[in-house]
Image (cartoon, rainbow, N blue to C red; front, top):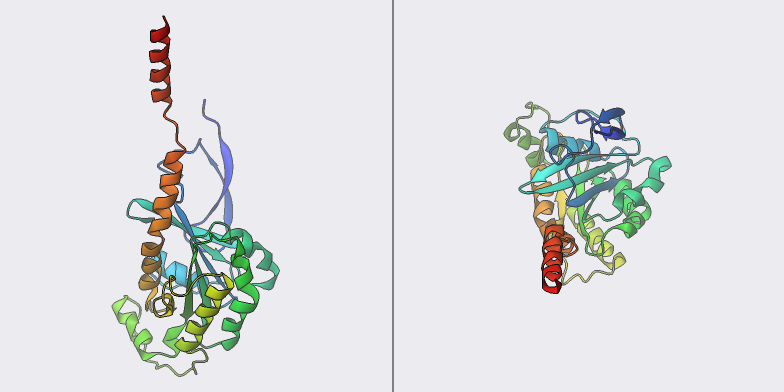
Length: 260
């Protein structure tokens, strides 16, 4: 007899929390894949977290509204399944962030390169939410909307299949790469991680454009490679706790035969 359940799922066509109640049969491995590891995007509203995720997963840029609560996508990376969580930047949903960060293997702290305050908010409001992440969690500092200030990011649109633009960057850049690297150092100190044994700031601070696709693939795929040790460790621990029932039955039969 098949038992039906109602579960909440997020629509793959939008990265908002447009949820729908879907009756499904008992979960099977083909449709209900178990994530091996979790990545989380944190940052103030309007820095482009949802657009970054949509650019990577859907390969296009879509104007979005602020995320309510949170949403996620499941990305298959080789033989592994990685869940990527998009979180709300609004103040009223701030408390949910620590729940989404629980057990995270990597966290993307996102700011807007044209807004100094968005970088400040990462340290003042969002860093404490990462206390529930894994002890060996990896942190990336990501400045989005680089197309507004960097000609290279703007020109990347033609390479990514985006519509060509005749405009040139004209917005003043408020957050320099050095500022992001300094924040990365403070994040490591807050997390009590040794800078010498951690990834260098140069490789963990990115400037991206969700609109043109600039450095978006580089960001996510760099992190995917970095969390592989966490995935392998988790699978090894799960396998060590797995009991083969057939082996136990065979052993029981052998013992019974010896005593007869």
